[in-house]
Image 1 (cartoon, rainbow over the protein chains, first blue to last red):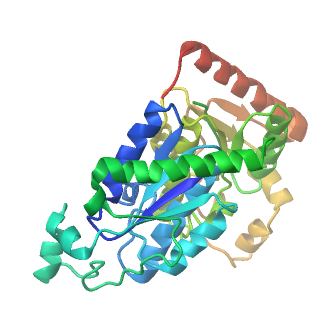
Image 2: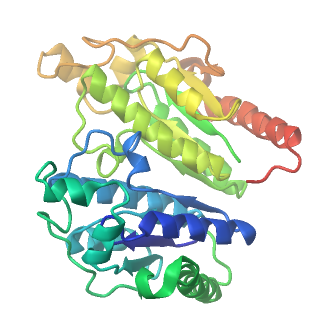
Length: 184
Length: 184
């Protein structure tokens, strides 16, 4: 048994960058893990889904379900996914055993996300070329009770990665102590 | 690294029954494994998909992708899925590393499947209440080069389970010998 580390936040908040940095740290520790990146999942897992509320919820539900399978089998699973709605995130949390869903709010303010604009989506949304852009004309509901809030602006990527890794490893440790003879 | 055991065949061929029996045998051996049952996957992974060729292929592709993730992380993954089209099964094989996709053709003849008719689907299809029924008005393409063919009629469930388990364990053994220092 492991946990799912769910990174939620606005586009360009730094979720995928943090996921990759976490992956490198875990690889150095020889910890088996898997990234399920919201964007990369669109080839196989979530192909054809759009950006309506219903499609976004389906996207979150499907990635969350796969994460719950992987983490249940001992694979630390990292999910950088915008996941703008509280209800959908709550639903995914409920799919996991208690304590096995670790929700990280990557709280980068929209002004900074828009300045980064990794994929040029904010610019296109401002020009009216793109609709349903989270943060512009589509809502983002910040987590009500995240397990962790990380501010990539004040911390920078290395410190932000460590700020996640520390509590994640602690959580894993606590859970393995709570179930010393854990099995299926 | 483990393998994906893909059970393909007509409805009521015995795929899910074999998957459950395999699961019990693997549990007794303390081998970490997961069943991804085509029917059960419809709640989260493949909700909303119908039975057109395109939807069937999407169903197979999505389950196969998750199986490839799980088996890559050392979890023996068993997929009882009708998966009627050769092309879609070939596509899933290609997602796996060589030797990691173990295709079992559950070759129960249609007359026997129709006699069993676990879910009453054949009866409804014959009455015209159901369309796109594999084997009746929708095609089933038997595997061209399956890793194994199992006939549940002549063997019975226990022998059929062993007929799969033996070669699967052998394959796992061969793959682990081929990569004695395997890691990610």
